[in-house]
Length: 185
Length: 162
Image (cartoon, rainbow over all chains, first blue to last red; front, side, top):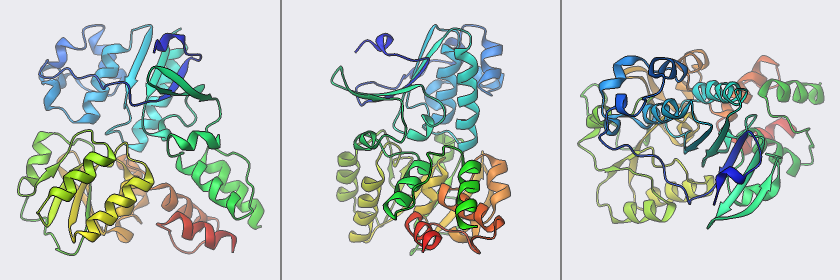
């Protein structure tokens, strides 16, 4: 599947057909070769990591190294980028992605964690055996649940709906809290 | 494992860590480690083949669907096995009886799940945050809608609207 044919600036992909980058025993300094210092800073790593082997790093650090190595590419493809990341880091990288695409770049996130797609991607594609099986711009799309567990805030809305409480499609906790408060008050 | 981390035979543990590298995993060398990017079937097979009373799961819940995780938990129960799940994902703490919270190589918090997940400020400062259900219910305490945090979404939804 030619990922460059997909529409959007930040694209979510659900698929088992793509492998995570594995630089094995390569040193980090041989992986991040373009604007190293700036790239490390953007992914919140320090320069002490440069002399370490990729294979010795945690998945958290590996994913940051992979991103740093691709930051200056026109099209950045990240497979299971959310693996090993903390909640706060996922929020940080979503805002970094928005900044990066404002410099005329595209980001394709092939991931198993729908929380990464929430408030981040323009469109979500389901790809199986080199074919687009489904695509949507709506993270609340029920058909998507056939392929991936929805983000928790979506799951909460779904369960409320099953109880006959129809909430708007909130994607931020603050907005959801205010809505619940209004109903309860 | 370090001697100061006492393991209770009856508990399932979740270890929250932001940097799960080989050095960190070496702490758990006394237990068989199940790791790798495993599908549900592969993970199920591995657990079924284990004879150990307790195994370490190295972020093996990543990529599984909620229903698959629940089936794996049932399998542990059925086989009378326990686990230590090492993860960076705070949502996984809901599967724990007892939680250790690390920042790099240092333990910052530990205790029974319901106690540790009340440490909202510390967990958010460390970057882990709270599981969605616990975060939502904790915020609803501030709105005077709830008087306790929740650890189960169905219970929260039931109590909220009934």
